[in-house]
Amino acid sequence: MTPLQVALADGLTMTRRNILKIKRAPDQLGAVIMLPVVLVLLFAYVFGSMIELPGMSYREYLLPGIFVLTIVSSAQITGYTLTLDLRKGVFDRFRTLPMAPSAVLTGQTLGDVLMNAASVVTMALVGLAVGWRVHTAPHEAALGFLTLLLFAYAYSWVTAAVALALRTPEVFNNIATLVSMPLIFLSNAFVDSARLPGPLRAVAEWNPVSTVIQATRELFGNVAPGMPAPAAWPLRHAVTATLLWSALLLAVFVPLANRLYTKAVSR
Amino acid sequence: MPPAITAEGLVKRYGDVIALDGMDLSVPEGTVLALLGPNGAGKTTTVRILTTLLKPDAGRATVAGCDVVADAARLRSRIGASGQYAAVDDHLTGAENLEMVGRLYHLGARRSRQRARELLERFDLTEAADRPAQGYSGGMRRRLDLAAALVAGPPVLFLDEPTTGLDPRARAGLWETIAGLVAGGTTVLLTTQYMEEADRLADTVAVVDRGRVIALGTADELKDQIGGDRVELTLTSAGDLHAVRQALASLAVGDVRADDAALRLTIPVSDGTAALTIALGHLAAGGIAVRDAGLRRPTLDEVFLTLTGHQAGAPAGTKEQDR
Image (cartoon, rainbow over all chains, first blue to last red):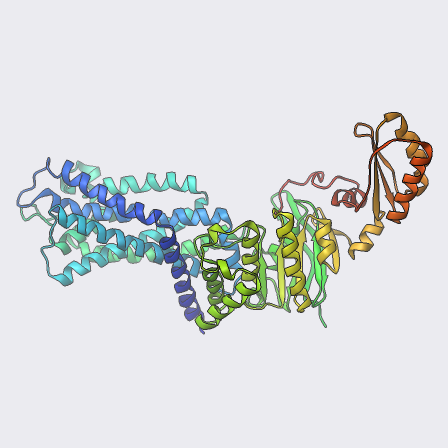
C-alpha cells in the first residue's frame, strides 16, 4: 500500500471507531440534535413573530442563520473530544501502532461531520414543520446542504488545531465560546448586515459565517425579494466565497492541526 | 543472536528535571527484563522512548533491529505495548477494540476479525466479547489491553506496570498469562514497582533510580545482595527490645533495625527458616514474650535503601512524577 492508501484506510477505520462511539454513547448526539430543535423553535416563535421582512416571513429568512449557527457550535465537539482524549492518554496506543498518524484527526473530523449531518437533517425537518420552505430546484437545495457540511468540516479542523494548541478541555471550551459567539452574532444571521453601523457592518460583511449564511439562503431560495442586493464581494458571490473560505481553512488548518497533534502527544 | 532490545546512554530532560540520565539496557531475545523502581525513577520514560512515543535527547536505542528514531515506522509493526492505564475504548466492545487494532496493523478485515476472536478466547473474554468495555472489571480491562498488544503477534512486548491497581486475584491471573507468553518465545520488557512481580516474571531485573540502572541481576542475586529474607519479631515489652537485638546480632547479615514504637525488630538473614527457628528458640529459652514472629522477603523499599542509601519514592532533587 502507498502512504496515501494507508492514510485513507486508517482514516476510515478511525471514522468507524467514532461512529461506533456515537452509537454507543448517544448523549452527545442527543445534545447535537436537541440544541437545534430548541433553537429553531425559540427563534422561530420569539423573533419570528416580532420582526417583519418585506416579501417573506422572517422565519424563512432566519432558518439558514440557525443552520449555520448550529453547525459552527457543533463543530467545536471535534476540539473538545480531542482535548478529552489527550487527557485520557487514548492516543498513546494509536501511536505505538504502525498506522498513519493523520488518521486520528481524519477519523475524528469525519465522524463529527456525520453527526453534524444528522443535526442538519433534524433542523430541516423541524424547520419545515414551522413554515420554512425550499424555493429552489432540488439540485440547488442539495448543494445548499453540501455547502453547510463542507463549511462544518472545515471549521472542525479549526477547532481541532485550537484544541491541540490549548490541550485542556476547560481552556478550550472558554476560548472556543469566545471565538464562536462573535462569529455567529457579528453576522447576517439575524439581521441584514447592510443595516449595521459602519465598522460592525464591515466585520459582518467579511465574516465567513455571513458568507455561508448568504450562500445557504440563496441555494434554498430564502432571500427576501424586497431586500437590496448586498454590496460586499463575499456576499455578492456567496457560494463561490464559501467554497474559497472552506478551501482556505482546510489548506491552513489540516496541516497545522496535524503538526500540533504531533507536538501535543510527544510531550 | 543480537539482543532484541538495546539502549545506550539514553538521556531525556524535562526542563530542569532529568528523567533519564544515561540509561543502558540489553535484553536478549526470548527473555524478560523487569525495570524495577519507584515513581519518578524513569521507567515509563524508558518505555515511551523504546515504543517511539518520545524522542531521546541523547543516546540511541534499537528494538527488534530497528532504531527507535530513524526507523520508528518499521519498529511499530514489530512491537506490542500495553500501558499503565489500559488504553481500551470504553464505548467499543471487546471484539470491536481488538478488530480496530488489527485493522490499524493492516491485517485486513477478515484476519482482524479472526484474530480478535482468537485472542478473546485465549484471554477468557469470549463471554464479554460483545459488551462495551465500559462494563469490564479492572482485571478484564487489563486483559483486553494486553490482548490488543498481541494482535499482530509481535516479537517484542512492552508492559508498563501491567498489574498496578489490580486486586491480588486479578494480578495472579495476569501473571499467569504473561508467563505463558514468555514461554512462547516473546521478548518482554516490563516495568514494575513490586519486587514480587519482578521475581515472578523476570529473567533479569534492572533496578532503576534517578534515570539510570543502579543494579542488574536475577531477582535472587539482587535479594542476596541486600541480605535475603527478613526475620521480623514483635515483642510485648520495650525493655526486652535491646537485649534481644544484641543476642540475635550474630544471625544478621546486615544492620538490625529496631522500631521502638512498634516494639519490632527487623533482622536481615541469609537462611530464613533456620534463622527464624534459632531466634524463636532463643526467645523461648529466655522466657521473653513474643506478640508476633515471621519471615518475609525484602520489600522494594529495603532494596532501595540498601542500594541507594535513600528511601524509595523520595529521591532527593527529583520530581514526584513518573515521566
